Image 1: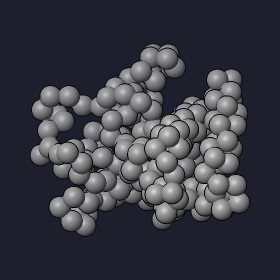
Image 2 (image 1 turned 180 degrees about the vertical axis):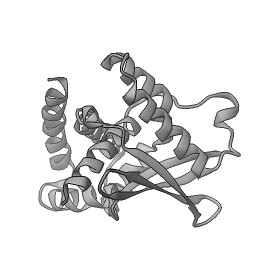
Image 3 (image 1 turned 120 degrees about the horizontal axis):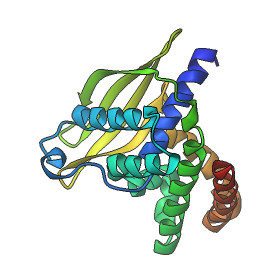
Length: 211
């Protein structure tokens, strides 16, 4: 992996961290169903970037603003479903809820601590591709001094709102990446074994993020 790629990924991770925190994003007319997927991603990412770059904001205020800007645009249940794949249907209601909560917390803690690496890389919006009336991919590019890094956001239309369920960085899907590692654990230890491991990882990641 090149230095440029690592730098871009740190910036992306900061943006993704924001996508993975709880809270509301838009209200009123801005949240109307006529918004395009591209507009949703642009408003979301631009808001996150502006928040991360604001020098006068404390970490606590920054987190609150990010929650208000972004949290409702990422569907963690849909993401968890895709990550577990066939194991989702094998899990009971309580296991699904616990996994979704832990997976969300793991991503939040893991990526939030990387936000300080944001160094004003530019985001270019390359366009959107509609795969159907309810599925779309928004293509963006992180522009660094030495390389352009493609980042795609996958969204679907749910109850009139475009929701993100995956982020693809340099053709590497976040969902698929976790799916591969989690499937091995479930095969050997079951759903409860995976949940137990996630509880440990979340505790460790949260402790690191608080340092």
